[in-house]
Picture 1 (spheres, rainbow, N blue to C red):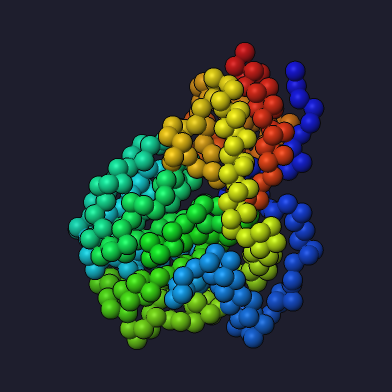
Picture 2 (picture 1 turned 45 degrees about the horizontal axis):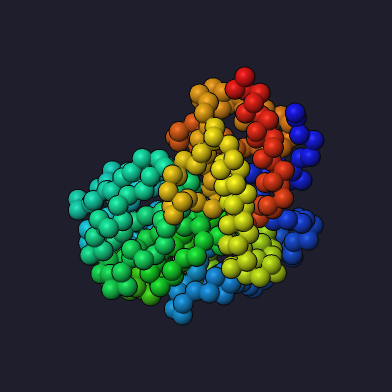
Length: 371
């Protein structure tokens, strides 16, 4: 029978992701609106976005946090264009965005000494094959495949190269070994449910040392320039952004950070996301027509949960449309380059109660389209 109880919040999109529980735009601190981002007030808010990120994440001493253009994509591109080329590169790809970094490194930067390790959707590369004498570029969590690296044990502490980690759907939801990550990028609109267009760039002291000792041979676009006169542009990491940010988005991000601290910090945020995954795992275990795209539980994402159904692509589309029309799940179709299926965001801003309410609807919709 058709269920009656619906999720209070049907927003399960994998980006932009659901706003935090209790979100109210009227509660934002908006005194920066209409003011220059270069004013003392604007700089203070931007600097706070950097310093609060570092504090709440518990970053090691010497790590820098900056707000940069172009969302997570811009942050990754900035890192690759500014840092790569000094030594060989290992780039890892098991889904769409990792494959994009392969393309940029090989076809845009045209680096010669590149080893691309690739795996199909649902699988992960052999991490034992990574050469840490090279720089290593990888996603911590493959948002479009639901496959994450299991931990940081495969990254040596005495690596010679840099680790450049796209962690946009992992930060604030997964336990990251910061001392093993030299560059980390993310965007506000993923795990924290913030607004788009702004990226966050985190640099270790090793990454800063590379920036100050190596100059890439290619022209550097203005929005990618992290150094001036051979030294790091420290202003970027104190709230002096390269281009004009949205101060409304900054206020929204600061609200999200305050919420993370209010629920108990990063550990509590991770626990919320893992509890969300458990709801879906229980449902999958009880129904033989649905399965995780990531078959290995150790590499199964707790944010971008990708699922395969015993339906052809057209019937999957009908199921997604049916749930949307009933107002119980919005934007849960799989990524356009991924195998046909559904993708349910289970990051920390999603309440487990809403996922529990969704599951009977998922079973009902399957029965409707499979008949």
